[in-house]
Length: 80
Image (tube, rainbow, N blue to C red; front, side, top):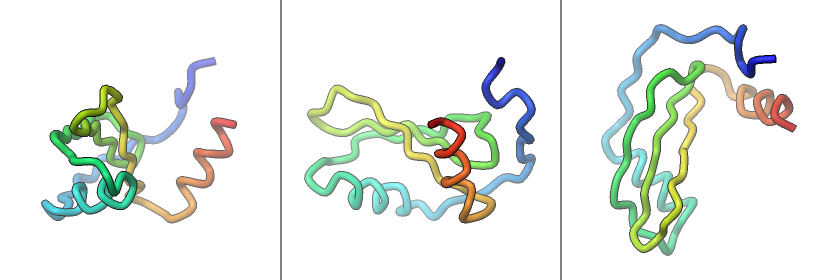
């Protein structure tokens, strides 16, 4: 089985406010400093943003759901 093989992809484009990513990262990592962010393409109706934090060797993906508020819950149910 191929994960997400039959999921629909959005053709809409979105422009996020410039300061929204740093604000979201600051809420999740209040003691860290964001040093880079990169939008990763081909998400399924969401934004996937790769973030890198200062003095942290891990890379993180910030996922912003763009359609409906229940999407995060449904995706969490599918992955468990």
